[in-house]
Length: 265
Image 1 (cartoon, one colour):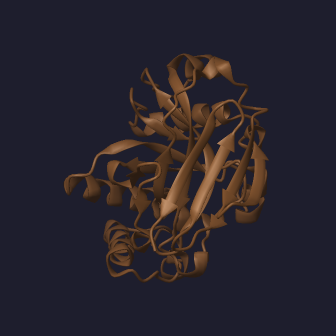
Image 2 (tube, rainbow, N blue to C red):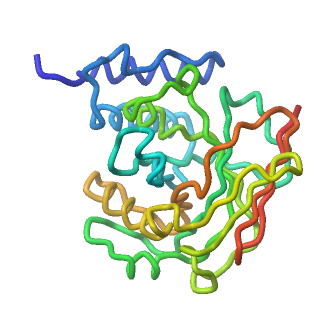
């Protein structure tokens, strides 16, 4: 038998992850249950979940890039980023209480969000194409979560688990891309009034724009275009910080302003 997963195993793995969402209990690493699974299989599991979510009425509103920093790639033993889908149900309003009980093991990351005004269809997308496609940028907080017990994830686990996506909070003040140098833009992350992390846009593949280009050229051959109105999260500028009931988290990005996430108790 060839290594990898058959269609039945892909559906079973997607079922396991969906049960973790519904039951509120993380599952053991998929790579332990399916030791022959590879990155290609992991994306098949992710796509199977997206297919089911959209069949249930949710809508794809963008994508996220994960493992975009050198430190995260070293930690995971990989040499490239990964991606996940952002569904409409993942977006939360700034300052409105976010139900923390909807997550299993939430952590939060500061990011720059690209909002597209033009379609990006890879392969062959350049930085110039990406710049022309971005309508505006916003400060953002991404809530990452894992359906895998104790965040004990391999690259296969995180990709299968929709790149450990959980939620998104967008700032409300759009800024033109040309008004800020994203490579040099510094950010601070406060939780409960305490400074817990600092970073800069250059931590994300040298520039968050490079992550947007990588994403368009990676998903294009799979028949996925980045559509006008889509939100793209290019990767965290700092390490991920755990969040707890009642936390208020604020990130400020130089040139972009701030965004606040409030979690209920």
